[in-house]
Amino acid sequence: MRVISAAEVEGALDWDSLVERLRQAFRRGAELPLRHHHDLGASGGPDGTLLLMPAWQAGRHIGVKIATVFPGNAERALPAVMGAYLLLDGNSGAPQALIDGPMLTLKRTAAASALASSYLSRPDCERLLMVGTGALAPHLIMAHASVRPICNVLVWGRSPEKAAKLAKRLDRREFRVAHTGDLPAAAQGADIISCATLSHDPLVLGEWLRPGQHLDLVGGFKPDMRETDDASIRRARVFVDTRAGACTEAGDIVQPVESRVLDPDDIAGDLFELTRGERAGRRFYDQITLFKSVGTALEDLAAAQLAVERV
Image: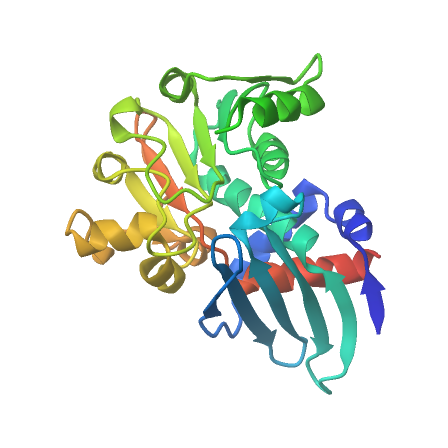
């Protein structure tokens, strides 16, 4: 069995190839049981979460990701998300590779947002606001820039120091990245707003949105977590990565459904429908679109297959 490191995963999965591999994976589909989601106690900090995410394609591969999410890890200088991915032969069940889970998750999550953006954001988007400064933030920035002509990026975070550090690391002459402390103004000026936080309360408000924007919500993977408010849901055409996952796990979908702000039937489409041409994405230039991602094991399986092919 091969062991594939984080550096090898990062080197193997360029954005163009990974986004296209995810597009093909959603078109083909796979067996995708709803992921196991278990709350874990943590001493001296917020509770953790254990995620088990299986997926398989008959005769090809079986895969399962074991991941943990401990929000308090930031205080220990550790990543919030850790884990590993096991890829097995679909005919014999024999283990083929053990792959670094955090890097695989970062790459496939950002690529899924870029895939959605290719259908939902305006083709001329140049200005991106990144809300959040965690491990996923730089990957989301570069993934969005792979499908749209992004050349100006603002980074906002609860810690101005972290936002400034991230902006300085990514900034270059042809790709300007700066930090901001004015979230409302930055949101109003962006073409794409991408959020990747562990917030339980809305950060981006619907009253800030303007016509033609695309809102990409990546955090909020539990029902009690939110990154935007009901006003955004009312104003936007709403899409999700998977209906089953978003309608049971994502606070930005679950809470508006419970309060009857959003009817599940009013969700305009998911990535299966978008990639197969069964639902239209952006319909007109001034439309506000919203994509809620909670992650699916199909993305992990597709990314793992591509990594094994290339390493």
